[in-house]
Length: 166
Image 1 (tube, rainbow, N blue to C red):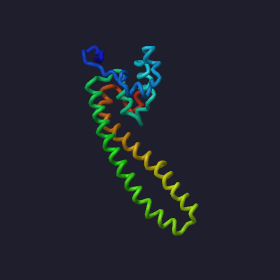
Image 2: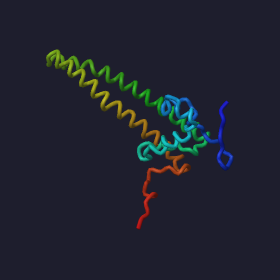
Image 3: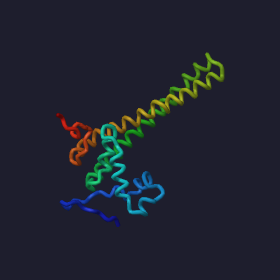
Image 4: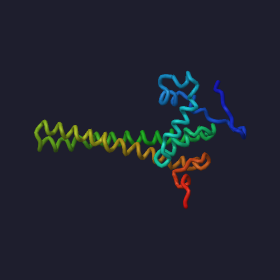
């Protein structure tokens, strides 16, 4: 049974720091849990993310995140992650199919070692450009959906509020 904390209004807070995913990612050796510092570790993770690029993570690891909002954010992540995995599978399939005709034409014009270098370059291009773009699109879609909750928790990509204008 999980122990839940509540805020001053009696709303149940999400214990993100107690889930296995958080512990495996940010406390893999279990030292923070032994020292009862998981809450502080979650605050450190929250403070580490830049809201202009990782607004979703900034909201998800907010110390005052409510349980219902955490469930909504998790649902949003699962939906976008499933779509990203589906798109990634289709891109991998299309890249695999597109490789063979291009490799066939390259092998007719190039020596065998050059054809192998072409194949290595093709794989490098996929890993260096296609995969990062796929993850960037996932992050953008997550950030777009997290904007609704960002104002509720005082998280903003607008840093002008931190500076006084003279």
